[in-house]
Length: 210
Image (tube, rainbow, N blue to C red; front, side, top):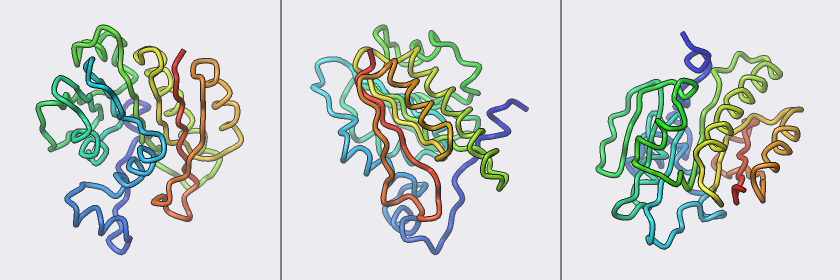
């Protein structure tokens, strides 16, 4: 079992949760869709002229709620690549799916998957580790996944592209964001209202890739 397989897991469903109920009512497969919606409303992740194809990667995409949100934003010729160790049931002409460990996919494979020669416009990562309840351990595992997402972004984003990563708040977050500032013009932190109050997750939005 790979490192990613040990750490990555799907979000726990809680039927009594308001956002879970809303997601179910609206036909989304997970409540996490509302987090991406909030991030997009603030940072306009998918605004584009349509003059060139627009390409998105969704790392750790299962069960697929972020893909469900992204797909209606895409125009003809645009593509979103979803990658996860677990299968997804979602199918769409604009969707390419890889059932792979992201640590084993080369930069060229990412580009070839959607036929891009210039790179992706947005890289999304809602990946989270399988938590053990020991805060520092969980934070370190989260950071490991974030570093993998950042690597993918550095290798595949086109100039001025955007990276969105979920990370568990901890002592190494500032160091990690400082590292991102070497590759991106702006690095912001955002806590969606739809994140559970007791959760110590936060999202990093790094825009304007150098």
